[in-house]
Length: 519
Image (tube, rainbow, N blue to C red; front, side, top):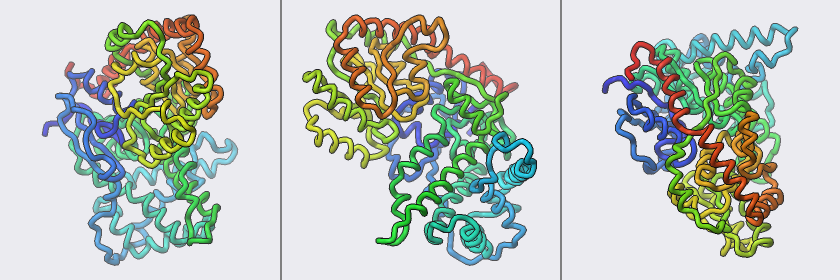
């Protein structure tokens, strides 16, 4: 195949998962038809991504899929002699990923030059690793798994560190942490060439981008919607399996805490590797840009490009709204813990006490976490809300929004939710938790923006009582509801139209492609 203009590096999103980030990717590809795109999808397990959720636009020249569960597939467990010299790069990578020494230099005490020097040495060493993994002059997955020195490396690290975790749990954690590095290195050798690479997160997609930038010397663009390391930290802090380590009847909470820290440090380090290679580093709002800088991104490389939507698409939705505001509260989003659907259910329990005719619609798929979906449904039944709360699955947003009186977002972490922008464009006020850019979307940013008024209410996250009060207020006070509706429609039209976003990304790609740009 001919070289694509842009290769998108996609972890766990488009085209196999519906939702905000995937919708955004589809929007970018469709909105820039003059460019050709290739897609590299990175998933966890094949079983999690059975079918595509999107029809690929005509300017997608190539799609390939890779799964992290295959990191060690097909490797024969044969002993291998690996010299200490050859093992040194993986020791450096291990130290960078998991050690407290691998902190961003901007966080180190200014008078102490030794840790900063060690950090810089590790970074130079890791650059060598990134260009030699799975190469003849580097170490392979088979050598790491079965090499004579690897066992000793892991054993020594276990003894030198916090040995609260059993050696078996620690051993498998280290193998699982390192496996994707080798898989991504193999991918970097074979994926089709492109004029520029663009990852839509840090993590594994960001590491692949760093590998490609180092090896192929092509521009690497990074866009973060949510901050990946923050979201993984939330996931890991909620991961019950980490608290179940050890033999039956002898669980050790300290073991889970230690291994949880290893996972978190690993993802923090992957983020720094991506930041060191990417230019520009894009985010959706000022709060996330500040977080990127705090996590090690060069401020000079960071930029903000806000999300945008096709506001014209929602004009029919506004026209279709009934004269009387429906007493229906909708949550549009994936049924996953980070969306905190359980708080939405509890909120509906409170609201229904004040408004007996109210309904709550959960609009989104449960493909990513079927166990959490079951828990949410059981909570609905246990609270006696079976007639009030409905699970509708994926729906056409433009068709469902006219049937809502409010959109409610209960997430514990967000970036700049498209669901809020779409609801406001369709004339639906919003009640949202104070995460990400939700306050900016609902209350405005600049003085001129804020002068438009509030387009709903913003409350603390995980506070179902505050969510309930806000919902009852808006559904029972018609003048307040209409004021919020007017502010939302005007704010989206003025500041969040997709033409502005697409023009900004056209400029980003033009800068990256340089002489190869063909408008």
